[in-house]
Length: 419
Image (cartoon, rainbow, N blue to C red; front, side, top):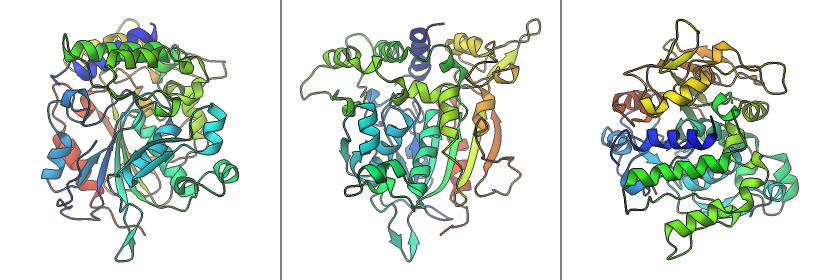
């Protein structure tokens, strides 16, 4: 199956399962108990912010999940980063989006891949992030879906360990992100994240342009005839910023006709989502001893009795995900440079292999433990499998996930404070 078909399927499931947000901080809200750190929701590939898609929520669909969490007393924000950008670029954007300031992709990185060093400037969701109050560092809890789980891990890595390459390349004007020594994240919870990649990306990882094109086409169809989807590619670093007064169609054409799609694929999301790309990231992005990690997997397939292959489970998986689930459910590979793929990879949520979501395993030194009621710091506390598809995990579809996210919020906000 070509990626252009998968692209339409991916966003169709995000748009069509319901009817259609920069985040709005609620400074008066406060955590009811625990460590009182704010929660930041971090979207996955092809995701969007609260001021996009005509108000249709990535987090909750028709339900405003951020508002639900705030109303329950958990101070929650929604972030927005490049939907098709690499994990490195997304981590840099997420840092600036939360802290405030201009995105710095790093001198060494930007020169290697040929894009601008600096990006957009943000006011900051939580400018107090990393400062001290009563002698304690103001941290955040991150909740991430899909690719968001990868780029949040990279953000934590850069905060704590910094980047030697960037330190050597720009010692005089180094971004604080690359300095290291910043224990600013209290916990990370991932849902349906491709920690070891998704074999869906392995089918044809060099068709990102087709993937993006048909993703946005699906969005346009979903918004309705005669209307334009308010979808921001967030590719300013590549010189593809929407100009003042520019119509969406012209903007999209400029993006799709750009040469960036033919350049080094390793600075775009589909490389990071592949099993080879995930393996490369796992080699240097590791779990930190001062962070609590939680992972949820999802599965919405069943085994075919005759073939043993995995197919979409009726009444659980939305039918638009049946085709990609079938691709994942029969894909194998061995004896190549990429990681071996056997039958254990076949169950999926329609987009991400279930086995990949428990935590980093391929080329990783991270430890994964089954959650037994007492969280273990510095390890992946595996919370098990949710019987739902990839987008239902964030509330797009027939499932209500409010209770799931309130449970997560209650758990992370009740963790011990780690200085």
